[in-house]
Length: 351
Image 1 (cartoon, rainbow, N blue to C red):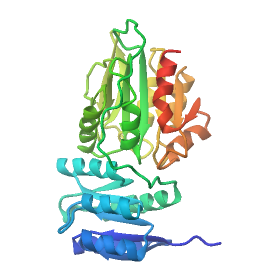
Image 2: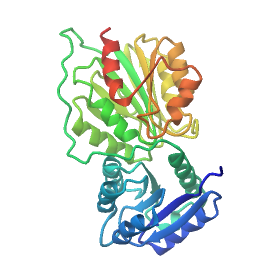
Image 3: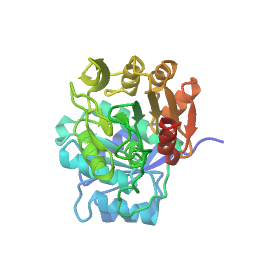
Image 4: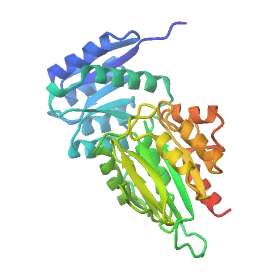
């Protein structure tokens, strides 16, 4: 039986942007634009009328902005939503809020239309639409105030330094998955956590700031030359590879703008490979939701160097691509639901 065309609704207040998106998608076999909307009120009506498989949703619109529309969509008829967000600090903050409210992914766009790279937009947009429709997208979300998790106490031991280093890689669906993982860690966890989340510059800083307000541990964007501390998580800045190396008994971060690896900068593979090269014995690697294969080679190297590795299971992933790639090459010791990964980490540390 032939596959049905993917039905897309485009929501944007810019007539020029609507035309660009429509031209891109109409030219793609297997995708059909069932309609467009100029504002949030039109969007709500057309979602009910046209029953799209995917909605592209602009953040800034008259009458009803993207976040207000998203809340209504998720309550009335949950459908995968890709946000179109400006490359600004405000755009980053709004995007993270949208991901918390139920959007499954986003596409950054320049503040000025004349700066849009049509070929790049086409590649990213089509890849995201096809991947999300063919993946298990979690549609049922809870919309309540997010508070810190209950405080967890660790055994009364002398943990004055870093006893474990944990590498985490994630992409599509990652911000919510990272929140779930990091809020499970108590502030006195004797580990430093290094994170690669595929995001543009600026977005990673906003993500770190947001997670820092929710977690018991400290969360920040990684900086070149920074010495790692236990109870801290470091997120690789957008457009920079992040690695760790040893220097006179300390674990030190480094950043670089070397060529993208696995199509990404920052790359999970680059981070995991740097952890695998440490003489430091207690290493862990965690690969979570995301499209593509980034991280599979790096986490295999980490496992071969004596590290313990975990992958998020398919059922709890927004997109199972990255974990599946790592599992398929034998790079993973345990496959777990997202909700169980944090406890497994603590169990392993205190085994």
